[in-house]
Length: 203
Ligand code: GRF
Image (tube, rainbow, N blue to C red; front, side):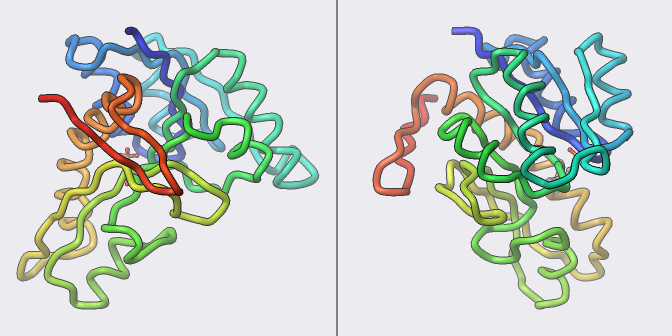
């Protein structure tokens, strides 16, 4: 099995790099075949430096979210991916995209969903005063930061944490969590049943 992974990005791309490095080291039997962004961002530059094909599909060039999502879908499908990973992609994808990739589209979110969905999950967790937050990888459905959960792991909130320090610790955890989640999806260790997942992760 050598899975083809396309990654959607908007930001720094540390999770994309973690995935690409895990593939290169043979820890994940896969290849990052494309990195697609909604804007120019460091993640695209980091992918290009690794000779991974990149493309920017900017929403401002399309009349609607649906048209933009369809254009992005065309770009993604051109790379024939087995798995599409939204890793720090700061846009809501229209149903045309989500439905075409059902079961092959996962999102990484920096909280223990269903707690703290949305673009400010780390800030919201701090503001709520929780003692534990974390990260989730889930299949994407048509609700924001929602869909069958594949893997989750907790991260403690420490005294004196700022949004930046807490998010950095969450990212450190995410780099391993995302690789594991891609492995279980690509190797068929996760099954979908009644909108939930059954994960049987082999060691
Ligand atoms: C991650 O924390 C991810 O959960 C969230 O955005 C962040 C992306 O970080 N959706 P990076 O761009 O991979 O460094």
